[in-house]
Length: 260
Image 1: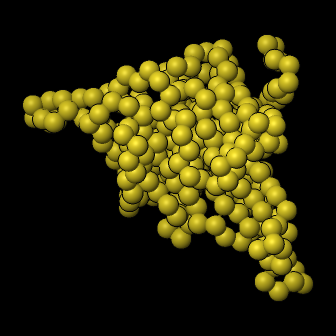
Image 2 (image 1 turned 120 degrees about the horizontal axis):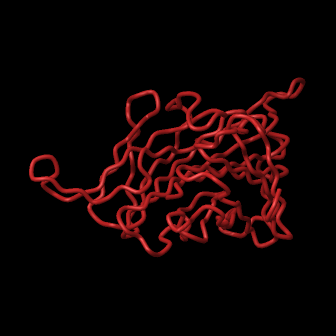
């Protein structure tokens, strides 16, 4: 690969996006958005009060953008962070992809966030109540309402494993590096595995790297505009709480955004 800066490994994997079956727990959650940059709209009949509108729906499985339906038994927190920083609980829709409409009257950044209920996976034969892993999953989607010049997505929403963009994706252009940092329990997380791909990739390319000591990493926006997804995964030995319950702890975080 050309134009790869020293210190960052940039690997290319061919195939249909997604590579989400890399863990024992094959299904991964992410958030899809119909419009990552909705504009404020007004109409005397259909929108007498100016507002922007978009729709968020769940991805679940290991093929981006959609693969399977997310059951209520898996979904935990689901909320919206508004431009003023306030937090609003969201209720998923009744359809298969649990679509929910988002309306906003003010310009600024919106963060839609969700989490899977932590659980155990994979019974270990010969050991009672002992599993292969205990997993937790988190997802965020970044939405720019109207004209947004700063980076309203730089603050954490409180997920245990979280991707924090160091630049607003709406400022990216082809050839740019999308830089971000990983936090685990609010602290920089090193050696986290990163995968990324574009929805409109004609070849199904996915790109991989690993976070450095300060939890930072970056991916190159090589040739595709439109929606992108970044997945971060980390495995740790069991803590004292889980040492008699599982072999390892698995954490996954996804981030979706769009390049204008």
